[in-house]
Image (cartoon, rainbow, N blue to C red; front, top):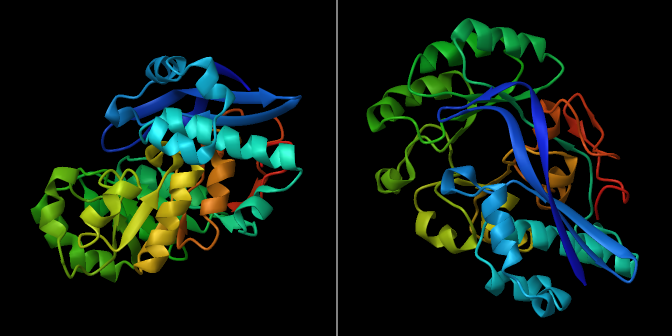
Length: 324
């Protein structure tokens, strides 16, 4: 088996603004495994807030010997590399390769039937009027995820809710809120029918959420990277955001999915931005999820060939030409 890796860059249609950064373009790693004329592909971005870059992932993958690559299996990979972008790229490429070698779909391999899903659409952090305008412009999209920091938080939320009384709204604070802001906004979030609050506090403040009876469900993102983190944060959050880049691929993501079902946690399946090739494996994990956040391709000026069909926020399962 042969491993080929290359760097690609995707440009955003507009600045993607969160509490921590402004993104106008992203660099991603394309991973390809080939053997006997079959090729498995994947795209990985890594976890930028943990210092991962395309260069660091190339270096990590470059340390694998030819003999190791020749005998790669998804199960062995879990102990070979830590959670993160490098493992994600290899793991998802292996799943794609297995599907092509066996002439079976990813649905058959995982025993998870793939159906169309409706994704959240992210509204970048901005002033209240601008966020309300973006919400109105996205009238064809019924589920919105608002990036909100600790400034003008309630004003932004009320403006969007006023513009879109029909929308299902999720808030993503990216760990930027103070504990006092969290407490002061609880009743307002319930009044404005917020469905989920994602990562309100910095991960080192998780202990403040333990057994907290908050008015809306709280979701762990930065606080939960992979399956090994689940037990640690189980008493702090009612929902878990599963991302392939964080946990290191489809194999561990499915393990996280099973754990959430067993422990009564709501599931969000999210993304770090990226093309349809990055979103396609996440479509498997997202089957039956409470919240689907796979809008990466909607933010890009371009996409991979044979990309996902997304109409009014509804995503069709990937074609065999794309992945799986």
